[in-house]
Length: 352
Image 1 (cartoon, rainbow, N blue to C red):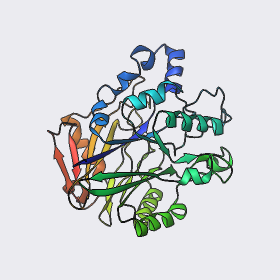
Image 2: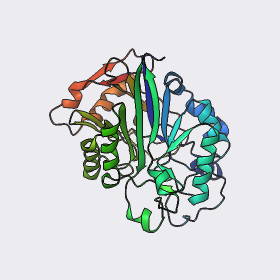
Image 3: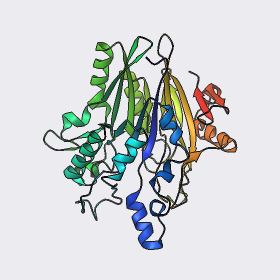
Image 4: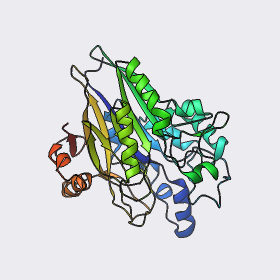
Protein backbone atom coordinates (compact mmCIF):
# COMPACT_ATOMS: atom_id res chain seq x y z
CA UNK A 1 0.00 0.00 0.00
CA UNK A 2 1.33 3.41 -1.00
CA UNK A 3 2.32 5.95 1.66
CA UNK A 4 2.40 8.67 -0.97
CA UNK A 5 0.58 9.02 -4.28
CA UNK A 6 2.06 11.17 -7.06
CA UNK A 7 -0.22 12.03 -9.99
CA UNK A 8 1.43 14.09 -12.71
CA UNK A 9 -0.17 16.19 -15.44
CA UNK A 10 1.56 17.24 -18.64
CA UNK A 11 0.50 19.86 -21.17
CA UNK A 12 0.27 19.63 -24.94
CA UNK A 13 1.84 16.36 -26.08
CA UNK A 14 2.53 15.03 -29.57
CA UNK A 15 5.39 13.49 -31.51
CA UNK A 16 4.74 16.04 -34.26
CA UNK A 17 4.73 13.72 -37.27
CA UNK A 18 2.64 16.17 -39.28
CA UNK A 19 5.19 18.93 -38.65
CA UNK A 20 8.29 16.77 -38.98
CA UNK A 21 7.14 15.22 -42.25
CA UNK A 22 6.80 18.71 -43.71
CA UNK A 23 10.19 19.86 -42.41
CA UNK A 24 11.77 16.71 -43.83
CA UNK A 25 10.19 17.25 -47.25
CA UNK A 26 11.08 20.95 -47.40
CA UNK A 27 14.46 21.08 -45.67
CA UNK A 28 15.58 17.48 -45.07
CA UNK A 29 15.32 18.13 -41.32
CA UNK A 30 13.45 15.70 -39.06
CA UNK A 31 14.19 15.10 -35.41
CA UNK A 32 12.24 11.83 -35.61
CA UNK A 33 14.31 10.48 -38.51
CA UNK A 34 17.65 11.87 -37.34
CA UNK A 35 17.40 11.29 -33.58
CA UNK A 36 14.49 8.91 -33.08
CA UNK A 37 11.40 9.18 -30.92
CA UNK A 38 13.16 8.29 -27.67
CA UNK A 39 15.30 11.42 -28.02
CA UNK A 40 12.21 13.51 -27.22
CA UNK A 41 11.94 11.89 -23.77
CA UNK A 42 15.62 11.81 -22.87
CA UNK A 43 15.73 14.74 -20.43
CA UNK A 44 12.28 14.35 -18.88
CA UNK A 45 11.57 10.61 -18.69
CA UNK A 46 12.22 10.61 -14.94
CA UNK A 47 8.88 12.36 -14.38
CA UNK A 48 7.07 9.34 -15.81
CA UNK A 49 9.23 6.91 -13.87
CA UNK A 50 8.69 8.61 -10.50
CA UNK A 51 4.94 9.17 -10.76
CA UNK A 52 2.26 6.64 -9.88
CA UNK A 53 -0.09 7.92 -12.56
CA UNK A 54 0.72 10.12 -15.59
CA UNK A 55 -1.84 12.10 -17.61
CA UNK A 56 -1.13 13.92 -20.89
CA UNK A 57 -3.12 16.05 -23.29
CA UNK A 58 -2.65 14.10 -26.53
CA UNK A 59 -2.83 16.68 -29.32
CA UNK A 60 -2.94 14.29 -32.29
CA UNK A 61 -5.23 11.52 -33.48
CA UNK A 62 -3.54 8.11 -33.62
CA UNK A 63 -4.54 7.11 -37.13
CA UNK A 64 -3.53 5.83 -40.53
CA UNK A 65 -6.48 7.47 -42.29
CA UNK A 66 -4.90 9.11 -45.32
CA UNK A 67 -7.20 12.07 -45.89
CA UNK A 68 -9.06 14.41 -43.56
CA UNK A 69 -12.37 16.01 -44.49
CA UNK A 70 -10.99 19.17 -42.88
CA UNK A 71 -8.20 19.69 -45.40
CA UNK A 72 -8.41 23.19 -46.88
CA UNK A 73 -10.82 24.12 -44.07
CA UNK A 74 -8.79 23.87 -40.88
CA UNK A 75 -5.42 25.61 -40.67
CA UNK A 76 -3.52 22.79 -38.99
CA UNK A 77 -4.34 19.08 -38.98
CA UNK A 78 -2.46 16.69 -36.70
CA UNK A 79 -1.79 12.95 -36.88
CA UNK A 80 0.55 10.52 -35.17
CA UNK A 81 1.73 7.03 -36.03
CA UNK A 82 -0.83 4.35 -35.24
CA UNK A 83 1.77 1.79 -34.12
CA UNK A 84 4.65 3.83 -32.66
CA UNK A 85 2.56 6.24 -30.57
CA UNK A 86 0.73 3.82 -28.24
CA UNK A 87 3.87 1.67 -27.90
CA UNK A 88 5.97 4.65 -26.80
CA UNK A 89 3.29 6.01 -24.50
CA UNK A 90 3.11 2.64 -22.77
CA UNK A 91 6.91 2.35 -22.65
CA UNK A 92 7.21 5.69 -20.88
CA UNK A 93 4.54 4.92 -18.31
CA UNK A 94 1.80 7.21 -19.59
CA UNK A 95 -1.43 5.99 -18.01
CA UNK A 96 -4.11 8.31 -19.41
CA UNK A 97 -4.65 10.74 -22.26
CA UNK A 98 -7.18 13.49 -22.77
CA UNK A 99 -8.43 13.62 -26.36
CA UNK A 100 -10.60 16.65 -25.61
CA UNK A 101 -8.80 19.30 -27.62
CA UNK A 102 -8.85 21.06 -30.98
CA UNK A 103 -7.15 18.16 -32.78
CA UNK A 104 -8.87 15.11 -31.32
CA UNK A 105 -11.31 14.90 -34.25
CA UNK A 106 -9.00 16.04 -37.08
CA UNK A 107 -9.58 12.75 -38.90
CA UNK A 108 -13.23 12.44 -38.06
CA UNK A 109 -15.07 9.47 -36.61
CA UNK A 110 -12.69 6.85 -37.99
CA UNK A 111 -9.60 8.70 -36.74
CA UNK A 112 -11.12 9.05 -33.29
CA UNK A 113 -12.16 5.39 -33.21
CA UNK A 114 -8.64 4.33 -34.15
CA UNK A 115 -7.22 6.55 -31.39
CA UNK A 116 -9.53 5.07 -28.78
CA UNK A 117 -8.85 1.50 -29.91
CA UNK A 118 -5.06 1.94 -30.07
CA UNK A 119 -4.87 3.44 -26.60
CA UNK A 120 -7.22 0.85 -25.11
CA UNK A 121 -5.10 -1.98 -26.52
CA UNK A 122 -2.02 -0.35 -24.95
CA UNK A 123 -3.79 -0.19 -21.57
CA UNK A 124 -3.99 3.61 -21.60
CA UNK A 125 -7.13 5.30 -20.26
CA UNK A 126 -8.85 7.97 -22.37
CA UNK A 127 -11.28 10.77 -21.64
CA UNK A 128 -12.46 14.05 -23.17
CA UNK A 129 -13.78 12.50 -26.40
CA UNK A 130 -15.88 9.55 -27.44
CA UNK A 131 -18.09 7.95 -30.06
CA UNK A 132 -21.18 9.67 -28.62
CA UNK A 133 -21.90 12.43 -26.14
CA UNK A 134 -22.24 10.10 -23.15
CA UNK A 135 -18.77 8.64 -23.75
CA UNK A 136 -17.22 12.02 -24.46
CA UNK A 137 -18.44 13.78 -21.33
CA UNK A 138 -17.60 10.96 -18.92
CA UNK A 139 -14.70 11.92 -16.63
CA UNK A 140 -11.69 9.76 -16.04
CA UNK A 141 -12.23 7.98 -12.71
CA UNK A 142 -9.41 6.20 -10.89
CA UNK A 143 -9.44 4.94 -7.32
CA UNK A 144 -6.35 4.75 -5.12
CA UNK A 145 -5.58 3.64 -1.56
CA UNK A 146 -3.02 5.57 0.46
CA UNK A 147 -2.31 4.17 3.93
CA UNK A 148 -5.86 2.75 4.25
CA UNK A 149 -7.43 5.96 3.00
CA UNK A 150 -9.34 6.00 -0.28
CA UNK A 151 -9.01 8.61 -3.00
CA UNK A 152 -11.31 8.76 -6.00
CA UNK A 153 -9.71 10.90 -8.68
CA UNK A 154 -12.07 12.44 -11.24
CA UNK A 155 -10.55 14.25 -14.23
CA UNK A 156 -12.79 16.13 -16.67
CA UNK A 157 -11.40 16.85 -20.12
CA UNK A 158 -12.77 18.69 -23.10
CA UNK A 159 -12.51 21.65 -25.43
CA UNK A 160 -14.06 25.10 -25.11
CA UNK A 161 -16.82 26.24 -27.48
CA UNK A 162 -15.91 27.70 -30.86
CA UNK A 163 -18.54 28.36 -33.47
CA UNK A 164 -16.44 27.14 -36.41
CA UNK A 165 -15.69 23.87 -34.59
CA UNK A 166 -19.42 23.31 -34.24
CA UNK A 167 -20.83 24.53 -37.56
CA UNK A 168 -17.95 23.93 -39.99
CA UNK A 169 -15.78 21.21 -38.47
CA UNK A 170 -18.52 19.28 -36.58
CA UNK A 171 -15.98 18.56 -33.85
CA UNK A 172 -18.20 18.09 -30.80
CA UNK A 173 -19.76 14.79 -29.79
CA UNK A 174 -23.54 14.45 -30.15
CA UNK A 175 -26.05 11.77 -29.17
CA UNK A 176 -25.37 9.74 -32.30
CA UNK A 177 -21.99 11.14 -33.42
CA UNK A 178 -18.48 10.94 -32.09
CA UNK A 179 -16.31 13.91 -31.26
CA UNK A 180 -14.64 15.80 -28.45
CA UNK A 181 -16.41 16.86 -25.29
CA UNK A 182 -17.74 20.42 -25.28
CA UNK A 183 -16.54 21.44 -21.84
CA UNK A 184 -18.64 24.35 -20.59
CA UNK A 185 -19.90 25.18 -17.08
CA UNK A 186 -23.55 24.80 -18.02
CA UNK A 187 -22.85 21.26 -19.25
CA UNK A 188 -20.70 19.97 -16.39
CA UNK A 189 -21.29 21.92 -13.18
CA UNK A 190 -24.33 19.90 -12.10
CA UNK A 191 -22.25 16.73 -12.48
CA UNK A 192 -19.45 18.22 -10.36
CA UNK A 193 -21.96 19.12 -7.64
CA UNK A 194 -23.48 15.64 -7.72
CA UNK A 195 -20.09 13.95 -7.35
CA UNK A 196 -19.19 16.16 -4.40
CA UNK A 197 -22.53 15.45 -2.72
CA UNK A 198 -22.37 11.67 -3.23
CA UNK A 199 -18.66 10.81 -2.98
CA UNK A 200 -16.80 11.85 0.17
CA UNK A 201 -13.55 10.50 -1.26
CA UNK A 202 -13.72 12.55 -4.47
CA UNK A 203 -10.95 14.83 -5.70
CA UNK A 204 -11.99 16.62 -8.89
CA UNK A 205 -9.50 17.94 -11.45
CA UNK A 206 -10.65 20.02 -14.40
CA UNK A 207 -8.23 19.52 -17.31
CA UNK A 208 -9.66 21.91 -19.93
CA UNK A 209 -8.24 22.77 -23.34
CA UNK A 210 -9.09 26.45 -23.46
CA UNK A 211 -7.64 29.86 -24.17
CA UNK A 212 -6.17 30.91 -27.51
CA UNK A 213 -2.98 29.91 -29.29
CA UNK A 214 0.11 31.87 -28.22
CA UNK A 215 -1.94 34.25 -26.05
CA UNK A 216 -2.18 35.06 -22.35
CA UNK A 217 -5.21 34.21 -20.23
CA UNK A 218 -8.46 35.89 -21.32
CA UNK A 219 -11.57 36.74 -19.22
CA UNK A 220 -13.54 33.82 -20.67
CA UNK A 221 -11.09 31.36 -19.13
CA UNK A 222 -11.33 33.05 -15.74
CA UNK A 223 -15.12 32.89 -15.78
CA UNK A 224 -15.07 29.21 -16.73
CA UNK A 225 -12.42 28.18 -14.22
CA UNK A 226 -14.02 30.04 -11.32
CA UNK A 227 -17.41 28.56 -12.20
CA UNK A 228 -15.94 25.05 -12.06
CA UNK A 229 -14.55 25.77 -8.60
CA UNK A 230 -17.85 27.25 -7.42
CA UNK A 231 -19.46 23.95 -8.44
CA UNK A 232 -16.97 21.95 -6.36
CA UNK A 233 -13.86 21.28 -8.48
CA UNK A 234 -10.67 21.09 -6.40
CA UNK A 235 -8.15 22.34 -8.97
CA UNK A 236 -8.00 23.60 -12.56
CA UNK A 237 -5.05 22.46 -14.68
CA UNK A 238 -5.44 24.00 -18.10
CA UNK A 239 -3.70 23.76 -21.46
CA UNK A 240 -4.25 25.01 -24.99
CA UNK A 241 -2.26 28.20 -25.74
CA UNK A 242 0.98 26.22 -26.26
CA UNK A 243 2.68 28.28 -23.58
CA UNK A 244 2.67 28.59 -19.82
CA UNK A 245 0.20 31.11 -18.43
CA UNK A 246 -0.51 32.65 -15.05
CA UNK A 247 -1.85 30.97 -11.94
CA UNK A 248 -4.26 32.30 -9.34
CA UNK A 249 -6.10 31.23 -6.21
CA UNK A 250 -9.88 31.40 -6.15
CA UNK A 251 -11.71 30.47 -2.94
CA UNK A 252 -8.38 29.06 -1.74
CA UNK A 253 -8.15 26.68 -4.69
CA UNK A 254 -5.49 26.88 -7.41
CA UNK A 255 -6.13 27.64 -11.06
CA UNK A 256 -3.24 26.86 -13.38
CA UNK A 257 -4.44 28.43 -16.60
CA UNK A 258 -1.97 26.70 -18.92
CA UNK A 259 0.85 24.23 -18.49
CA UNK A 260 2.00 25.00 -22.04
CA UNK A 261 3.78 22.42 -24.19
CA UNK A 262 5.49 19.31 -22.91
CA UNK A 263 6.74 17.27 -25.86
CA UNK A 264 5.73 19.09 -29.03
CA UNK A 265 8.40 19.08 -31.77
CA UNK A 266 7.22 21.98 -33.87
CA UNK A 267 8.64 25.39 -34.77
CA UNK A 268 6.46 28.19 -33.39
CA UNK A 269 8.96 30.74 -34.77
CA UNK A 270 9.60 32.14 -31.31
CA UNK A 271 6.12 33.66 -31.06
CA UNK A 272 5.72 32.63 -27.42
CA UNK A 273 7.76 31.72 -24.39
CA UNK A 274 9.63 28.42 -24.36
CA UNK A 275 8.94 28.12 -20.62
CA UNK A 276 6.35 25.50 -19.64
CA UNK A 277 5.22 23.47 -16.63
CA UNK A 278 4.73 19.92 -15.41
CA UNK A 279 2.29 19.65 -12.47
CA UNK A 280 2.41 16.91 -9.83
CA UNK A 281 -0.25 16.40 -7.16
CA UNK A 282 1.32 14.58 -4.21
CA UNK A 283 -1.24 13.05 -1.84
CA UNK A 284 -0.21 12.00 1.67
CA UNK A 285 -1.08 12.70 5.30
CA UNK A 286 -4.31 12.34 7.24
CA UNK A 287 -6.51 14.59 5.10
CA UNK A 288 -4.95 13.67 1.74
CA UNK A 289 -4.71 17.33 0.83
CA UNK A 290 -2.20 17.29 -2.01
CA UNK A 291 1.02 19.21 -2.29
CA UNK A 292 0.97 20.98 -5.66
CA UNK A 293 4.39 20.84 -7.28
CA UNK A 294 5.21 22.73 -10.47
CA UNK A 295 8.32 21.77 -12.44
CA UNK A 296 9.43 24.32 -15.06
CA UNK A 297 10.57 22.79 -18.35
CA UNK A 298 12.01 24.38 -21.49
CA UNK A 299 10.69 23.44 -24.94
CA UNK A 300 12.33 25.64 -27.58
CA UNK A 301 9.60 27.50 -29.49
CA UNK A 302 12.06 28.61 -32.18
CA UNK A 303 13.37 25.27 -33.39
CA UNK A 304 12.30 22.53 -35.78
CA UNK A 305 14.16 20.00 -33.62
CA UNK A 306 13.35 20.92 -30.00
CA UNK A 307 14.15 18.57 -27.14
CA UNK A 308 12.32 19.27 -23.88
CA UNK A 309 14.59 19.74 -20.88
CA UNK A 310 14.40 20.92 -17.29
CA UNK A 311 14.69 24.64 -16.75
CA UNK A 312 17.98 25.81 -15.31
CA UNK A 313 18.36 28.02 -12.25
CA UNK A 314 18.79 31.20 -14.30
CA UNK A 315 15.40 30.70 -15.99
CA UNK A 316 13.32 30.28 -12.84
CA UNK A 317 12.94 33.98 -12.09
CA UNK A 318 11.21 34.51 -15.44
CA UNK A 319 8.98 31.49 -14.80
CA UNK A 320 7.80 32.95 -11.49
CA UNK A 321 7.31 36.39 -13.04
CA UNK A 322 5.06 34.94 -15.73
CA UNK A 323 3.07 32.93 -13.20
CA UNK A 324 2.47 36.04 -11.11
CA UNK A 325 2.29 38.80 -13.70
CA UNK A 326 -1.31 39.85 -13.06
CA UNK A 327 -1.37 39.29 -9.30
CA UNK A 328 -1.23 42.81 -7.93
CA UNK A 329 -0.94 41.76 -4.26
CA UNK A 330 1.96 39.37 -4.83
CA UNK A 331 -0.24 36.63 -3.35
CA UNK A 332 1.06 34.03 -5.78
CA UNK A 333 4.68 35.09 -5.58
CA UNK A 334 4.68 34.96 -1.80
CA UNK A 335 3.09 31.49 -1.76
CA UNK A 336 5.59 29.81 -4.09
CA UNK A 337 8.20 27.75 -2.26
CA UNK A 338 11.26 27.13 -4.43
CA UNK A 339 13.32 23.95 -4.01
CA UNK A 340 16.45 23.86 -6.16
CA UNK A 341 17.57 20.50 -4.73
CA UNK A 342 14.51 18.45 -5.62
CA UNK A 343 15.67 15.26 -7.40
CA UNK A 344 13.04 15.71 -10.13
CA UNK A 345 14.25 19.22 -10.96
CA UNK A 346 13.74 22.71 -9.61
CA UNK A 347 10.36 22.57 -7.91
CA UNK A 348 7.89 25.37 -7.22
CA UNK A 349 5.42 24.24 -4.55
CA UNK A 350 2.17 26.18 -4.12
CA UNK A 351 1.83 26.81 -0.39
CA UNK A 352 -1.90 27.39 -0.06
